[in-house]
Image 1 (cartoon, rainbow, N blue to C red):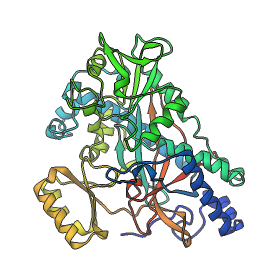
Image 2 (tube, rainbow, N blue to C red):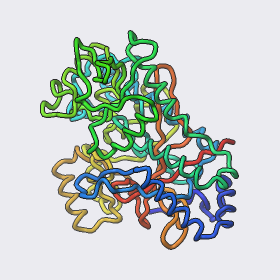
Image 3 (cartoon, helix red, strand yellow):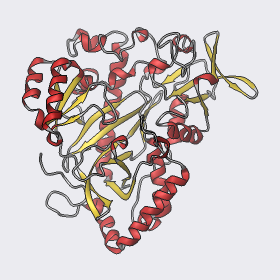
Image 4 (cartoon, rainbow, N blue to C red):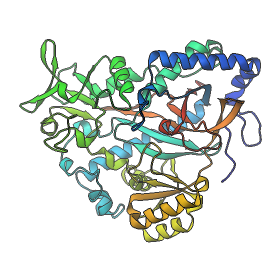
Length: 472
């Protein structure tokens, strides 16, 4: 694997301009002062109660996502390029989703094989021909970005169903401003605090056409045992909307109402953090206790907007991801601004043969996997693990894709032995409303805290950093 690009020190060890003030500040700050503030940050996170659950972990309620106090800094010029590329990509994803549930021009043009869509477990035939308000399917997208050198950012994956992590972006900033006012004073950092307002504006803008001028928005959670419940309650509070579970909602005459102390209140927009198959036991899983009977009939009658729309999982699929450059060109007639990571589709015999011959060099992922689970990182795997994966690939090649082991960029990070480079990625959050796409400048930087590790997921021991976009 190539040597990783360090975002602070550059390829030849020369300090990059965006990091000059941070470097000066670090040299002026004694290591014990930094360690003291790191400890303070941890206490603040624990006091606020920011935890996440790992399923199967008996101490799930007690897990904190480790927070690193050294910010990741991106120049305004770099952000301008990223923002342009992200908006382009999400526009194309929305056009693609509308097409596969309506005219299917992209399938007729033989750009994507039919079976990749129709035999896909996350394709929702219930959405065939179904209109969604303003043709917006993905209202909130979390696009995972990795950097490999000074010029190139790649999209690692598209999260188009219920992307999480925005609460950490907001809380990280708040804690950094509280603990490091002196460091902020040296920089012009673009604000992220407008995210809840932007999200509420986007959600209200896609309310059903006959909704009132002040549409009622609710955030639907699976409940307190969900791994992201902290985020659900945090966002509902920041948005000033009700946090509801399925049992708090009722459908009457194809309209959705929530139970309140003052009686039933009509709901126009549901920001749902519940997966498709649990939304409505009458349409999907009959054993779902999380959903609302009749919700899909209200949705199909156009009386409620679900954000994100039902059926967006097809754009999360990692095999579909491999066609994103063609998807952008097909719908927008433009070259993609942000590159994909080169991807081998194991469903194709020639690609499978290559992957089987090079397993020790590649990263192999399940097409529906998430959270860093079900993944092979060839260079770090034992021979036994590689052979077990080889058997899996032979048995079910269509369930996997493979990618080269990218040398993800590194950023300085606080470790037990002082500052050290650790690999990072970035998840910006892209909001699509009725007539505009907005992105607050920044996102969630995730950091692989184990030396040499490329796995940044919190469920796999990763942490987070505040992301500073410099206002230039």
